Length: 601
Image 1 (cartoon, rainbow, N blue to C red):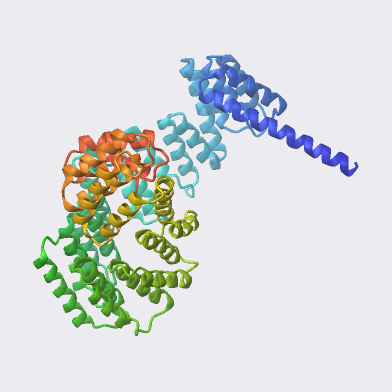
Image 2: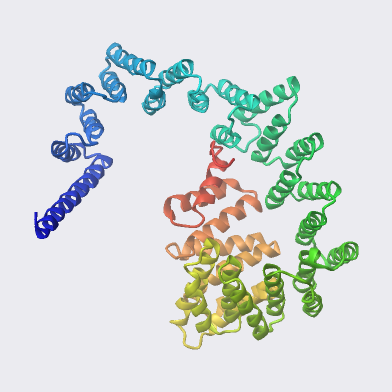
């Protein structure tokens, strides 16, 4: 064959493959759209051209949807008669009879599928799954049990437990999984928790939660084991009962020789993120008391101070926090091992005490420490943040640029580039900010990429509208005030922007920014008003999902109106599926409805 003929032949094959692919896609679209007759015609054509192809199940499904059971049965019988035919065809044939109400005939074929497992136990996985797919749960359980009986090496314990749960037999499911935990044989605790998570909620009064707690407690009483403390701790975290989880973690740590404090620290962070500050503080105090490792002690102290700073209400509170920082620096000293403590204190001086000069002096002292490149970059970034607070833009940009070069292949370098853009935005150099942001929109860090995209759109959309950039400069100034934690003046400046530039494209950005600042100030009614204005006047704007999510969280966390939060989450789920808030909105929506989400381990 000549090269030309070979190329033509190959081109013909590729063309035919492309046609088949297009027809297969179209057939699936017809089927999914309920146009079963059109789907059937295409699948028959595809099957005729490739009798050994994968179209039998689709054809059978089309016949069944059209109630052409005889044609479906005939096709299944022909396929089952082939040598080495899959036992799944017996299930399909039985199911075809069941659709016609011929249960006795259906049972005969289901039995044939189980017989295939008896003849060849390796079929247990596919046959069990086949029964499961048809919602024949009892048949699936029998199949899996038969496989285990025939070959003890077959591991289908998770599948059996899951099936008990799907049947609603929660006690059997829980006991099956708890038996696996107790056996310690090839047990994947993460998988077990994922299965259980499908059937419980974050509501401690959920009957499924109550049953699980009772069964685990019973086992803990009958045969005390750290495993049960771990299980209870996990359940209490799921139920957001961090104080009760802490009791379990203490029991685990106190009983285990050489036990790690890491699970305790992680619990403290979860409680802290969920704003259970009392439990978080107690956890970190426990960590401090039970470790001799200085970095761990210092970090725990910093978490406690972060909580206290967030809760501080007046200058006296802040003075007490300042004294605690000074006490810690006196206790642990100023060296390479306490860099995080020194940076945290410097930021506290600048952003909370409005003493950027004191913060700069402290960070300047740190420059004499012997630091590796990563820690040096961390110090420079903190110094730049303080310089930016003090509106020393040029020096801040120098430090950020140095970090960007030092850590160019690291997320820290990308963060530094974003801060270069942010600082340029604050000082009114919008073109240079856009240049930096253009690079960051493809950042490996999704968070940085999203922030870069939002700031880039904010600048570019409003540069086009007003050559003097008056509104954008006002917004940038308000954003800088917010960065400096000067929330009151920032709100006032945004009021001026909204009054003087009503109806301009920046209005929704200003409303959203101001709403978030009102939340910082504890003025939740005004925050709600701003978010509702965006929802009413900018329903198709790019910030609509931001406003909806902010409103939902406001209702849930501050106004205590979860019934108002629910439709906000729902709107994100059904109308903003490409939103970065889609996943957290879906979780919150299911939680508020009391669904068993099955999310998280």
